[in-house]
Image 1 (cartoon, rainbow, N blue to C red):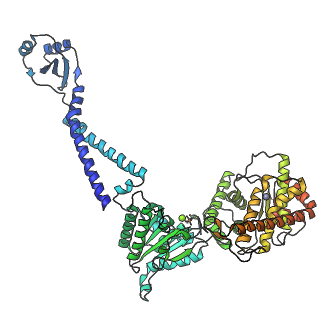
Image 2 (cartoon, protein in one colour):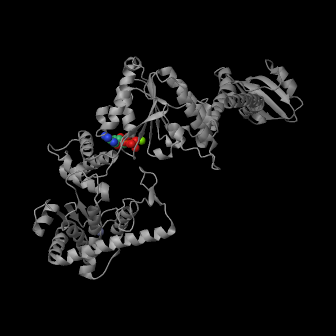
Image 3 (cartoon, rainbow, N blue to C red):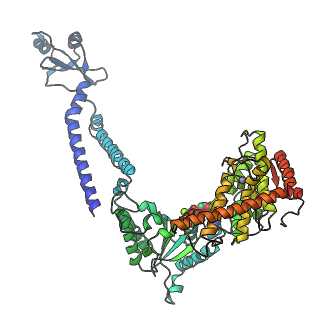
Length: 611
Ligand code: ADP
Ligand code: MG
Ligand code: ZN
């Protein structure tokens, strides 16, 4: 291994340099230090000490006299003084007796101090230097730190006690759980499967949008299976040095093979598993890592019990070689939860906070269509925070409803100053949406209308909540939805004979839906069942790209415009037919700022939820 040799060479070099510096330090710096500790005095003091018989040693060199004085505690202290033109000095000293002439007296400190200062201290210094230089540098460069650990993978071993998660922590993902239960069962009792000759899938790939519990599911498998669990994130393989990622993969699988049966979990595998396109972009390192991963997955015995789990939200970008049978041959979808799933997730997280006895989780679940598990967990937490903020010890239904709005639209901006005129426009705008929604057959009932501004920039909004779960959208429903979206602007036009920028978000949504009707759902009169747009990454926002000629693109725009225009006209006619109710409701909303679906329906003179 190239890295390892490089490394030991570096270690030797560093040790050699350290030793050399140490010797130099003792030869040059230490004497200077000892000399510096000699006290300078004047000639008088020297003569005095000689007279008193305190001087035990004298050395004369050049123009310096050094002398050692015996102190009261028996120790010796070395002084130095300048040389005088004193020819009788030597005789005088000799006469005094008991004085030795010696060469270059030194201040003797204890051997221990000398040893500490001369050898130990520099060694400590070098050790610190070593750490700072290599570890610090390694971290900053993202690679050396790993080189220092000799290419060991950083896969952490998790066992049950550590993840602490079980399948009961995961709600709603029943299909995914079922598929994983089988894997857990295999790890518990491999014989049952091998007797019949079956070998378990080597790998299972968890796919789904962010926050649907993929990582959580893998942790739950670890918790249930009671076998070693290696967890590593795809990005940890991406190294600065070519070959390091591959080395890590090799090492990970070596460890896993030793610990079998066990589970290896690679989170966010798309970071290393991207399609190899062989083009100029050529990320050598990533490609090598992927190749190593492919080789390792082929290399081990499927019956031994190493199961590889991986998670990604971009399955379409994965290399096909990774997905073929024998590698990740199972694909376990973790989709956004449906109504039942949302309710279950809310209950799981709701049981972790203290709530009032009767909480209608179903109502919250209905109001959160399209929310992921992570968002639902966040809603529960926001509700708990709100309860604490208002000094209560239990989470109430109202906390939950408010926190749904916080997650959708941000916090209330209580101190936003909005003029009366603008407030009026906003109120008419929102009632416009609500009225158009209520007057159409194919529209979800109005749940709440508010004109309290939010931190997301919304100045008000109308919340519609469906009774049950909807999986399909009919053409009539889509058209009703677009009409509802144009209802706000229509009210402005009808009442104030003007239009405002407040409708920008409505316009965006209406356009998006109308466009999808034309290009993807085949719901326009101008085109048949033709896919004019393709969706890029399904789980991450779903950006679309056109797949048609420029002429067709122009026609699409016309179609979209026609759909929106027709809906807009419909909204206008609904509102002008009901203009009395529009005034009444808008004034009620202006006064109350927030009204419920029931209040709305009562004024409208209809029974709630029968529209
Ligand atoms: P990802 O799919 O992006 O890996 P995670 O597994 O990290 O999502 O989920 C984030 C958090 O969301 C979890 O820690 C959990 O609190 C919550 N969560 C997501 N899905 C579920 C679920 N099905 N049941 C319970 N909690 C969930
Ligand atoms: Mg994750
Ligand atoms: Zn609007």
